[in-house]
Image (cartoon, rainbow, N blue to C red; front, side, top):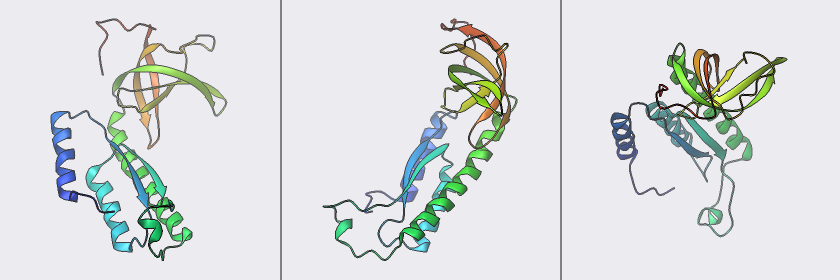
Length: 182
């Protein structure tokens, strides 16, 4: 796609970011199946995921856009190949996410609650950590409204897509200055 930088340069920038802020989490957009993408090029994308260790990705299969250089190129890839590569990419990333979230287990987080839902017939509230990871938790009682409350949670289990936590403290809609920032 004619990028003006090398993979090594890009990974060096990611390393600098991670060194300057070890708590930083990174995401990216990835398109698979660009016109005539080879199997080797696709493998290089998977290798990049392994090296970059993104917290999450937004991934898509290539679709032609009129009036672009790519639209004028003869395309030998099929939509089936693109779809399969997208599924492989997403499954690969989920394994990375599972590994990077596992250390969250046992840790405490200050979370802004954004809503609730039913999981297996059980009401659970959810919020996001300061690095945008979702944590679900059971309310103290079903009547309490935690919407837009700041809460302290301890993560019990973590998966590739979300975490389950226990409510430790409800600070309400205004977090006090003395509250810990996790």
